[in-house]
Amino acid sequence: MSYAVIKTGGKQYKVKSGEILKIEKLPDSKPEAKVEFNEILAYGDDKSIEIGAPNVEGAKVEADLIKNSKNRTVLIFKKRRRQNSRRKNGHRQEYSMVRINKIFSKDGKILSEAEKISTTSKKEKVKEAVSK
Image 1 (tube, helix red, strand yellow):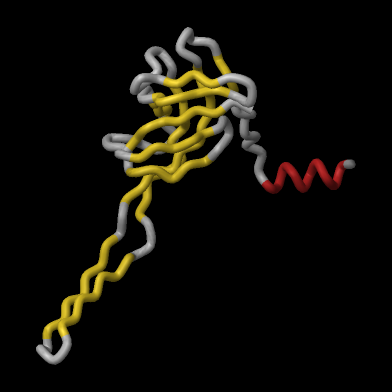
Image 2 (spheres, helix red, strand yellow):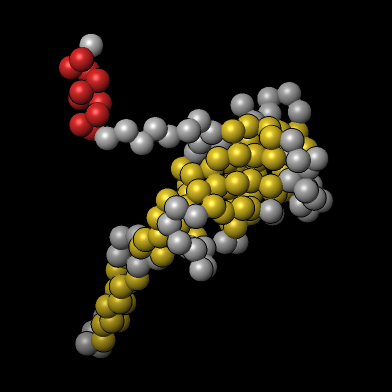
């Protein structure tokens, strides 16, 4: 199974094709759009690995943007005892959810590809099950 180490949003992620990731929000991105990560730090499989210095030139990872959203609220509460001083604040971090489709090597060859997602509805699945 091939994997790649990508860098996005100041963080590094080890990704495989078909995997769904929650990353820092990508600017100017709409759902159902193709996203391309060009900052590949390393890629490889069980037998061999290619490591960049710092990036592997020519390697890339393609992904589909599933949605942009916000995380749950994190409450920040500060209190100074015996001084009647308290402060309550909340924060909701924005994120993008992406599905990794393809991992390309530095010479443009596809290392791994995710399986296609079937978009059949529940009614169609029920009809197929009943007809069998």
